[in-house]
Each structure stands twice: as structure tokens, then as C-alpha cells.
Amino acid sequence: MEKEAPHFIASLILLTTEEGGRQTPFQTNYRPQFYVGDPETSTSCFIHRILDRDEVRPGETARIEASLLCPEIVGEICPGQRFYIREGN
Figure 1: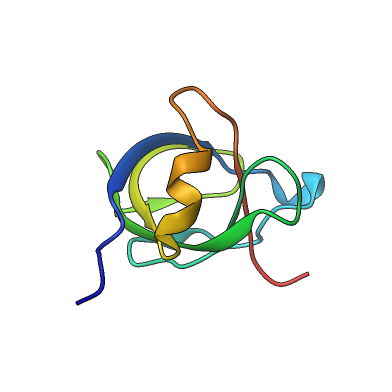
Figure 2 (figure 1 turned 30 degrees about the vertical axis):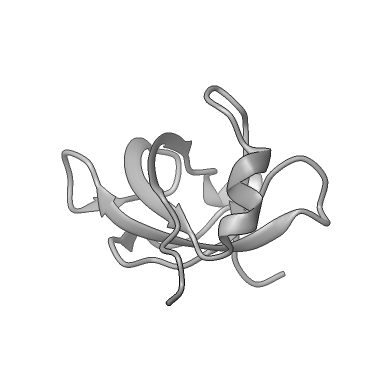
């Protein structure tokens, strides 16, 4: 049986389109690529819930509930650590 990755709560700052961010908002059940530390340390991330709203628009800050789809990377993150999520190039 596979071990489910633990959920975590994080503050997320979505870049504006002009800063190179998305052009459209995203809703729950969003699955971007998650990077912590160097670009080689990455996995898919699943955003289960956006707290206190239905979507996040470019330029907004929101709190999310998410989990990493590769539990091995969980040991490499700690409270207060910065991370990045990306999609495509």
C-alpha cells in the first residue's frame, strides 16, 4: 500500500502576468510542479484547497492546502521555507 503524502498549509504569492506568471486564475485541484531548494529537487504538487476563496488570480496572495506527490521530498522542507510552483516552461 502506498503511503499518502502529508498535507501542508502554505502562503502562496502568485506572480502577475507581467512578472512571468499565469494569465488566468486557478482553482482547487490544481497540479503544478513544486520546487524546493535547487531546480533538481522537484515533484508534482496537488493543491487540494484554496482557503477562504474559490480561486487565485495573478498578483494575488492566498493560503493553500496542498500535498506533494513524491513523499520522499517532504523531509527536505521545513516551516517557513520558500518554494516555487511552476507549470509548463
